Length: 277
Image (cartoon, rainbow, N blue to C red; front, top):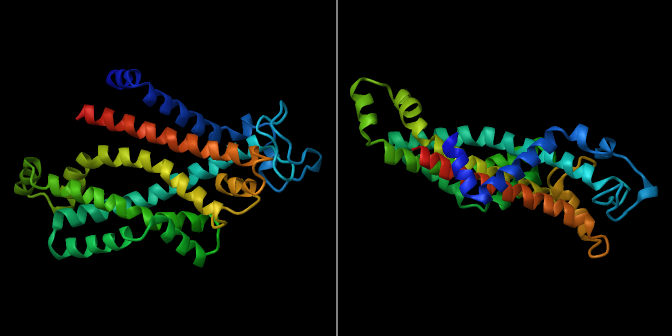
């Protein structure tokens, strides 16, 4: 903890990233308490406050049907974080398992698994997600599946390279000499030494998952109205630029702050975990 505090204090950007991420996460968790108009996350219409600029009552203005934009952005953070956590919770175990098996066993198993990984990596992530969402109904669950399908290969490639570097180390050879099975060596000997790199990548990727999910929603392939989503809010407001600038600027800033914060925290984790090793 002392070393962590020293690193954070030495790098103000890392501390700022922690503050941004904490603000985003706490806002999402406490949305029902902190937003002034919790009912505006749903199908509510208030034409008396239609398309109002930022004011004391509505600090980020209102949208095209009179809903408070600040309230909807905070609830959209909850959806975005849920999507990111679920995607990584599915993609990371799949990619880590594939990378461990391919890197440790080698031979034909390595060839088949890594060529399959290369096939997925050869397709641009957003294009693959758009293709899947074009076939499936555009719902939150299907959006998670689409993003997951394009995310696991990155972890497979990362863990594969780490495993190949670790499998000739002395502790691995010692475990094999003592009679440890392949599963034990992979998951109890090699995997713990890959955890710092995996955790760092997960933190960085959480911001990118939010960005990809917002891109899908911007194209109409993500979370559907009236559920608040940052990407769809940007898309809805883009038509009314520059007059109703707040409709696009504030959701866009919300995406920027979330991605920027997770990237800064990822950089800090890389330094902290590297220092611990």
